[in-house]
Length: 580
Image (cartoon, rainbow, N blue to C red):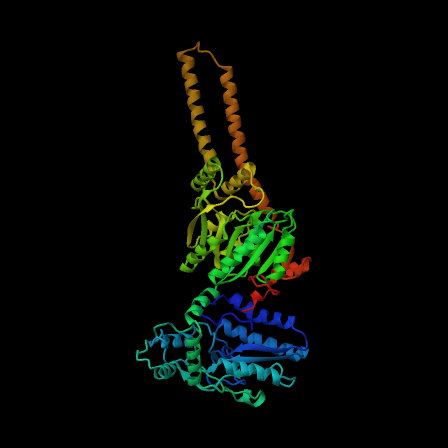
């Protein structure tokens, strides 16, 4: 089951093709030659030819999803015919029943039926071919038991053969569950690829596999109704809303070996509280301690954890970018590995993200450090904000939750030397801050010092401000004007007060002042030239020498490059998180 794109909001065509075509191929490649391979195809393969479709009907794709599923059916046929694999494609029509996504038609219809009302509905004339989930599972078992070389590679319809319009479905539900409400037709838009008539012909499936749908629509609706009554369906709705989202936590680690296990435990607890899918990516930026060993042990016991090791220390910004490239979440959370960024704040980030914000960043209202360092940090952010040509929030570090579309834009930026909190503001989108107090480092000593903070300040200012150059230009104009006035004053004084003494010391001071000013101007220009020089080299932002997934280690260039290519849309072939 490798599928993406069957929902209206799943409109990223690149991810549709990579999941449905490459994903299916990856699964086939990972299975053995004697495997029995049942592929979950789709009735969407028929596209425009969706009326009474049989396996001999010419497929006519009407969406990216439809096209990708047709291609995956050909992948199945190719492996079956060329490599004698036992593989078959089942074209599933409208499967409904237990644990179906709570936003789909029948779950939503039954949910409202329990309250004696109706949900918003599309056009009443659209038809479907409904198959209960128990029958679908029986179809897969029958296909597996019947599969042999003579039918391997074929596609079969999993359908009832009955055309049921949405109006007929609602009428059946109204009568079955005693609903009096009048339907609000067209109160929600049709899907762009919906066909007015959509049902299949099950004859070939019955003749060659021996399967047919046994559960009537009325029976299936009753079973779904009873099932919803027995379980905590409201909890399931809330869980499904969170589970439909996936968060990738990326932790930049350097001398954080003691903090990593605690970071893992706290992150796991937070994600379980949120009730969302997640992955945790620890990026070991060539730490001299036991970080890599600790990360590998965590990876072995939790498939949601991925470990990355760099060939040398490239810095936290490169570590974040490395993790972002490998992430597969709908959003990413960036954290330093020293636990000064409290993982529990992610719950507040998540709520803001669900509200619709694309970037949610932490604002450090207070740091547990000396008063004078607090003052210096606040002074820097004040100056930086004033000098920058974009509005960069004050006291906002890298700790943030970033939506996937923003992550993709950040990854595409070509610059080598990156200042993420600045780039995060530069790309735009809707952003909001969340206040928090930043605690002291829990283990060990901080790797920051006065000179490193000066380096960070220089990097920030010269990456997002041209004001130093403008400042020198203004000073140059000012002092040229002052020098011009000085010449005039000297000439006037020569004639008015010819005996006025000349000062050698004054000349020396002026020479030193302007010499220092020139050196400062040259240094500013040099900073910008050095950045240009660094960017023209086009060196990679980082080099990975190891990726850890489960108990597997990928260390050779070929293995890592292959993972990078397959993850160009954030899906790791070896990770179960890549299959939906």
